[in-house]
Length: 287
Image 1 (cartoon, rainbow, N blue to C red):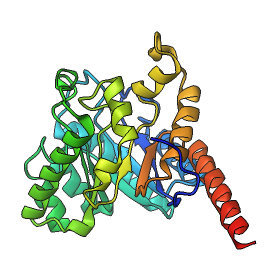
Image 2: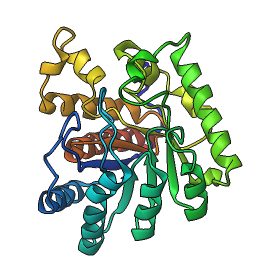
Image 3: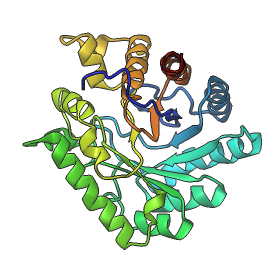
Image 4: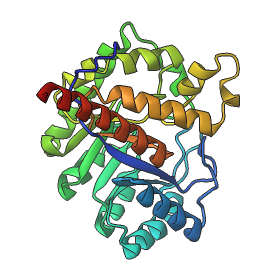
């Protein structure tokens, strides 16, 4: 992607990550207690998050699936607490299980973020249709224990777009309103480091689908790999957060609906800087 300083800068929504899991790749076990989860949600809100995405099941490479009951046992108390706290921002449920989505929407959550794009649970689209929730459909080819073996592509950007279109068609056929759909290229899911960067650089292929786009690159291994090719796992969260914020700034050339990030403040700052630069360019054009 070549930077174009004159491209329109659309301000994306910032979705802050709240993982209620013991084994997430970045923040496992940090927010497992109700108090810790609520404190972090408040921090995300104060930092400028527009949405808080609550997840109870890790999707890191190699993660073992948990039961629906265990997932709900983690997320439902947190959702209730956050709604009681009335932070003034939207809540999203990060789940591959339709029943968890149904329960969360019933409590007052307004967004279903399904990283499997409805492939893990065939009832997900029916729940989204019934509840009229915003539905994030991600590109996905298989669960965490096998996804790294499913990254064969001739043209990753074109094929991801085609497969997303297929999932969108399926969702619409199940009654999901097209205007309620957001698509996500699924960075890190069934894609190696090089493929992730190829996909990020060619989001125009995803834009051709004509739907809002959510990008979730935050702290992922391909980000770390660009900073330290030999030892990506040794790259700190702080360095990954800076790199994620830089990528967000560059991607503001695209018409993104949102970005899903761990460090909300760094991302909000990056968006503000690009916005100020854009305003400066606009002011110059008026002189």
